[in-house]
Amino acid sequence: MAHSHDVPGDLTRNQGLVLGALNHSTGPLSAYDILDKLRADGLRAPLQVYRALDKLVERGLAHRLESLNAFVACADEHCHRKGLIAFAICEGCGKVDEFADAVIEERLGDWAGAKGFKVERTTMEIRGKCAVCLKAAA
Amino acid sequence: MAHSHDVPGDLTRNQGLVLGALNHSTGPLSAYDILDKLRADGLRAPLQVYRALDKLVERGLAHRLESLNAFVACADEHCHRKGLIAFAICEGCGKVDEFADAVIEERLGDWAGAKGFKVERTTMEIRGKCAVCLKAAA
DNA sequence: TGCCGCGATGTTATGCTATAACGTATTGGA
DNA sequence: TCCAATACGTTATAGCATAACATCGCGGCA
Ligand SMILES: [Zn+2]
Ligand SMILES: [Zn+2]
Ligand SMILES: [Zn+2]
Ligand SMILES: [Zn+2]
Image 1 (cartoon, each protein chain N blue to C red):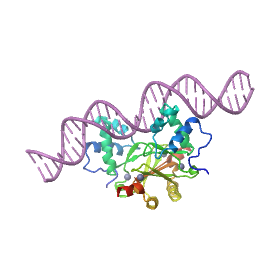
Image 2: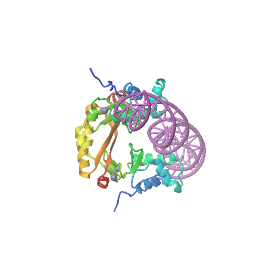
Image 3: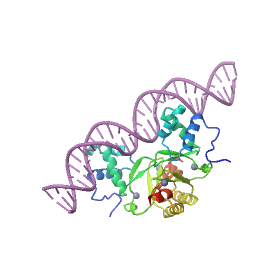
Image 4: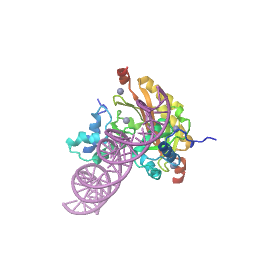
């Protein structure tokens, strides 16, 4: 059965390597983190990673977390069909939970409509502590 | 009458300078933008700006825009009493519109409650084109 | 086949963003 | 007065991102 680590066959070598690094990570990775993981595969310069990331993000296979300057693999193969995506980022363990919410999206659409603002992209990132880390701290 | 450019009297010199720079700008400023504007006032190092920004953001007098690595003065003197704040950023003219939405906040609270996630901070930034820029492009 | 155009790649250099580490100065209360 | 907390100044360094340019490889197409 298909799962979220399946990868489109039409990725270039660098894109495949970068997506692989993200898929095998338990948390977000910076471009330089990714570069370090891929030196053994022949990557040498930040641009090789950034260019691959650009394409992956463009296709919805990866997401950029603005508040971390880092990237994650998309957790849902079909998420790019949806609009707004939100991320809950645990400050304790670094885990990221990706989710979509139609109500929030609609609400933003209402606001934009009233203001005459044309939305092109939305960043939504929640920082805090996940249930596991909260329990561990108690 | 009070307006949004009023400034608390208990700011330090550097904090006052930085907040002044933000208040007199029509758009977001990076820390280095601010530094350049304040060299005439004696500021010399990025850290002087970052330290002031930290305090201003902590007090809700300024906000950091994660997707721009830049800062704006708070548009509403009392916004820090509210919870979640959202920003609509125009890619055309750079203007930023700050707003709050209780419905979105509640919706996020529901999600967090269901997951056992403790929210500490939320980033919400909409990128797109404002009404003025849309009209100009038409 | 041979040419061309386009997108991906490789490489070097550079610019922008942010913080570490250290010492001094100022402030405000015990 | 003394102390502790906070702000300040300065240098150095770490971390994130892109400019610019040359090259390569693969498709369409004459
Ligand atoms: Zn996704
Ligand atoms: Zn956690
Ligand atoms: Zn505000
Ligand atoms: Zn605009």
